[in-house]
Amino acid sequence: MFSHVFVGTDDLDTSKAFYDSLLGTLGVAPGMVDAEKNRIIWASPTGLFAVTKPINGEPACHANGGTVGFAAASPEQADAWHAAGVAHGGTACEDPPGVRDMGAFKLYLAYLRDPDGNKLCAMYRMP
Image (cartoon, rainbow, N blue to C red):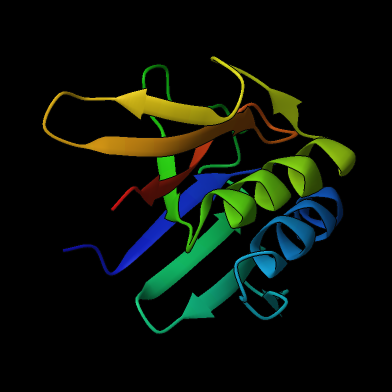
């Protein structure tokens, strides 16, 4: 359904270190820097994720109520994702990583905020 997701940042170097580590736990190669456009792009077979300095020149801010979700292949991968994020300047938020019972199905979720305050989630759909 989605081709790409962009979030804003005021510090490309910090974002690159954070997301290279975070997305590396999901098997995504380090981000490609587009210095001309002030953005960094991570590519996977299912889409693109990018950070960018806002085009309008205003400070970056996070979406109030927004969450960017990343697919995890297992609860262990979601835990590694969460640990990498916290170790590289992210902040744990919501409940600790774990199973959420949604009635007909169960999800393993891990939430954190990146250094710019963007809310992120790693999600594994339990069998």
